[in-house]
Image (cartoon, rainbow, N blue to C red; front, side, top):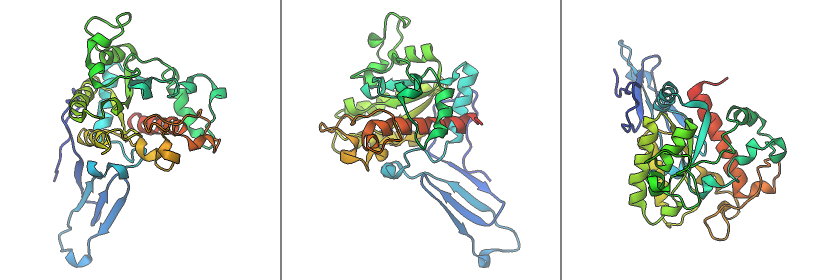
Length: 311
């Protein structure tokens, strides 16, 4: 018996999926899995009859209104995300490439660039296993994206007037141009801070951007933001809700910086405190930027292994 059928990946239609649910008849247990835990409940023997009862296995995630409890690195990668990846390869996307999309948090040289400059510019400390993902995506870390810039927001990303008219084709938006130039399999997002007071516009345009990437077979790596300029975490709620609706991985960066002094933010409560990506230095790791770079590597490594089945 089947509760939910996943659509075939002939074209990756951007139809939202809230969850995956299925049956398993192997053992008389009921298993519940969410973003942070798995609960297994054995069915009492008194309830069993001579005819074996099927076991119901329900794969769940915590709902979006509990996004603050979601893990920093996604606990699972959905089947739909894997289908998006395979569809992208069929379209000619580069499995060794990712793009940076969004505001100054994506455009700054402090975001991931050092990993393309050489080992003297970073130290993985105890996270030496991440060298593999650095090697695998060499060339993407330091690349200047035409879909990322200081002050960028969802409106700018969709407007051809803001595209680089030297390298972009006529009528290409910054988003279209970046996807055309880079042909990425993944895209890091840094959006929302510049639209803190326009949540409805942000939500509608981010949905358009997500669906555009899904059509192109690009996996959006949505990220919560560290700041709370709007005062009620509405932007992060929107980001989590869309990740949940489209069954996409969420990089819950907000949670990563909560233990840090001032939650990893400067006195303006908007920009991250800075230090280079030297993960072996406890003093540097008291700042926001090392954690942004570290967790970005971790989420990219996890998703890439999950969808591409890398060794």
